[in-house]
Length: 463
Figure 1: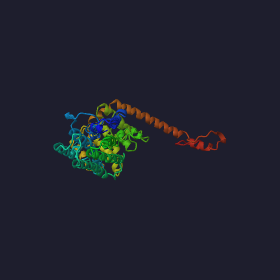
Figure 2: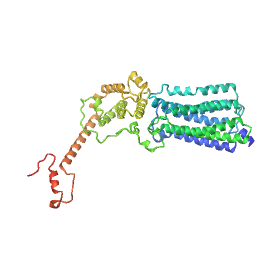
Figure 3: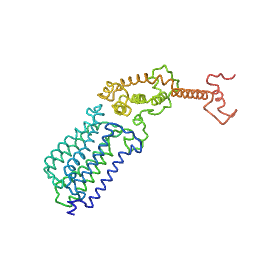
């Protein structure tokens, strides 16, 4: 036991490594599951790269724990097995520190968007490195002072500040999360974040204890074996908790893979419960379209909007009509329902407004900056100027061609058929009584009533 405690290769070491491999495979499958199974489109921005960074940081943390804590019998004469590479920069900065920083960044996004009601003042690709500055400074100091032994351990004089740095990040995450506790989130981000903190905090407390024992009491063989086993197993639990209970970009299938109903949402409007979102309402008017009417009035008719959207798509300009459609969905949300309005506004911004977005619309830089720098994401006129520019663009480039296209002819034909069916249905209702009886003649107690009803709708009764 004493030999494997120092050199590695104990049975518990192999068990811990096997568990860490399984946990990382599960984590990897969890990350790619929406894209492989549900064909979720890859989003741009922090909604995509922060989860990717979490996966990379998880791998670095687990690998660093294995290489810096003597799980295998490896000769540490090679430079790439240096304690400072894996125990300081890998396990500390690029592992645990990067994981906590990603979670703090996600919590800060929730705070800015739903409490301050604006997009974060600092973009995520700047905010994340800023949160890691204490780790960078700490790792640089340790690397310069070189307090680690040949077994990658340090004494209490260095262990206490390192544990305090870990605790500082956990406390920061709890504090930022507490600042948004009063928001009633639509997709339970806060509950998921608290659950992630709870599971992680319990793991971190035990992880801290194992870490301190592993660093200080390196002369006790059984304690070394047990502590490094706990370090790796709890590290595996930590990375799964941080990723699976995620608050990152809760849209559509990425909202929560634990809920089956989320797979039924094809639009953000449906996910938010906006009435008649994404479907044709039964009460949709069956009126003929007058080409002389303004386009913004015509687009309020959903049947026309779908036909015009298909035409615009065929001209590779569908994003303009889709933008109008989603802004119209936003207008259905009551002005006092700020949370749902913020969800929808953020979705529109990330899909159509952000430079390089999936369906970026062609608007002026002034309108784009006005939206991106707004101090209130819930205000009703947030997209007014951008929508006016889009309407002018559609009138200039699409409308005249649409009236002469097969899309309009098909729409007109279908409208005429619906109108004819509607008129026939009205005539049927008018000519036939809704009340029927299998009894006829003088024995029918409703016979006189049938006679009276059959003479309705403007027809005179026979004398």
